[in-house]
Each structure stands twice: as structure tokens, then as C-alpha cells.
Length: 259
Ligand SMILES: NC(=O)c1ccc[n+]([C@@H]2O[C@H](COP(=O)([O-])OP(=O)(O)OC[C@H]3O[C@@H](n4cnc5c(N)ncnc54)[C@H](O)[C@@H]3O)[C@@H](O)[C@H]2O)c1
Image (tube, rainbow, N blue to C red; front, side, top):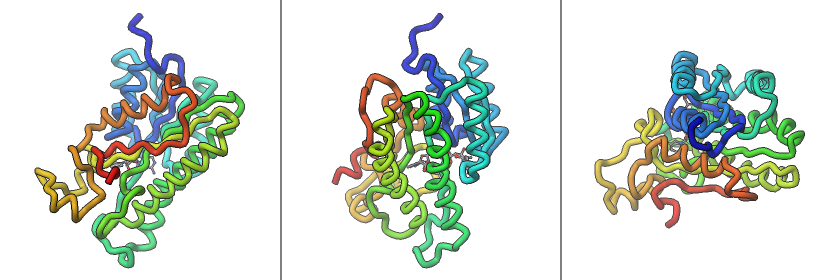
């Protein structure tokens, strides 16, 4: 037997687990002893993540689901209960970004609806389907990946993404109070820039100059974070060590939102 893990015996659902932050989270949570339900729309990459976890002695299953479809999310939760009988942790992390450089009035109805559906409604659907189980258990932990984009304004572009992440922040606060009596904790992480496929789509200079910071407040000040660094923050929020910690929006943005 290896060392005791921080999540030994816990069942964790992580969405967007085929790449980037979610992938790092699935691997880390499994290393820490969790039984991981890795969720994504991208089947091949997701199966690779799960195979990798199993190859190193971890426990994981893949659940192919589009988080913007309630029936998919319900199936993801039903599969989890069938496999392991409980759900300790839900990490709502899947998201898309579209219309990155479009002024608000140029964003198409399709792009607006897609971004809100995956990012915000997907988070809500996850909550809707796991909470009955967490209430039955009288224990649970929900983590939502927000963004600095939901905390401070950008110059031009990504209004739908910003609105979706702002919605996640408000939802996190609402749920923390609403679910507190059932011993269900709800917190959010708000990354700045992360070194992932999505992160690379948002331009960033080699060196963050004063001029750059002044003109675009919604980027991180220190350096781009690695996915594992966001995953470790989720691990901190997921573990029992933090006791009743709930309702916080934890910026992980190199200090940029602190101005
Ligand atoms: N990368 C950054 O700079 C950055 C900054 C702030 C916040 N975030 C947030 O971090 C989280 C993880 O993003 P990432 O950077 O790892 O991006 P990523 O694109 O690498 O990963 C996102 C994953 O979500 C999956 N996904 C997309 N739509 C889905 C759907 N409908 N159902 C299920 N899965 C779906 C994708 O297939 C992908 O595997 C997101 O919530 C993102 O908004 C990222």
C-alpha cells in the first residue's frame, strides 16, 4: 500500500476531464485515492486519460457526456451511483470559449447560446443531478471552475464567456448558502491564464508590461499557471481538511484581480 491519499475512498466526478485542467485534476484526484468519474464530450482523449490512471493503479471510469444536455448529465450521475453508490465531489470544469474577439453586438445567437449552455447551464445541470445524492448522504463538495473573466471586465470580446463565468460565481454563492444546512460545500476557483488549449487561444505577450496590464485587466499578473497548479487548488477545496469552508471564489490569477 502507498501513502494515505487526501481523497481516499471518495467518489469524484470531474467534467472536462479529457484535457487541460480537468485532465490534470482527474489524474491528481486518482493519485490521492479518489474513485474518479472522468467526463467529457471527446471520447478518444477521455479514454486515454482513464487508461493512464488505471495503468498507474488508480481507479477511474469514463463517462461520455455533453454537460449542456440534462439527459447526459443525469446518465453520468446514474452511472456513478451504479458503479460506486455515492458522490462526494462534483467538479464542474467543462467549458468552451467562442467569439473571443467579437464586440458584444457581433456575437451570434448561436455562439451566445452555446457558451451559456455549456458553461453555465452545464454547471447547473451537474448540481441539479448530484444534489439529491449529496442531500441523502448529508455531505458533499461542489467545485466550479469560474474565471477571472467573471470577476473583472475585459476590453473587447468574449462577452458570452464573461457572462457565463459571472453566472457561475453568483450560482456558487447562492448554492453555498442554500446547501449549507445539508453539509454540502460549494466553492469556485477563478483562474487567470492557464497553459491549456483554451489558454493558448487568448494572446499574451512574452513579458507582461505595465502598459499591457493597464490596457487589459483581465489577464494574470504573475505568470501563466500550469493545469496541475489549478488541480492542486481544487484538491485543497475538495479535501476535508478545510472543514466548513464554503462560498468562496478563489482567484488563481497571479494577483491580477486583486487590484
Ligand atoms: N485556460 C485558461 O486560460 C483558463 C482561464 C480561466 C478559466 N479557465 C477555465 O478552466 C476550465 C478548464 O479549461 P481548460 O483551460 O482546461 O480548457 P480545455 O479546452 O483544455 O478543456 C476543456 C474541456 O471541456 C470539454 N468540454 C467542452 N464542452 C463540453 C461539453 N459540452 N460537455 C463536456 N465536456 C465538454 C472539452 O472537450 C475539453 O476537454 C474551464 O472552465 C475554463 O473556462 C481556463
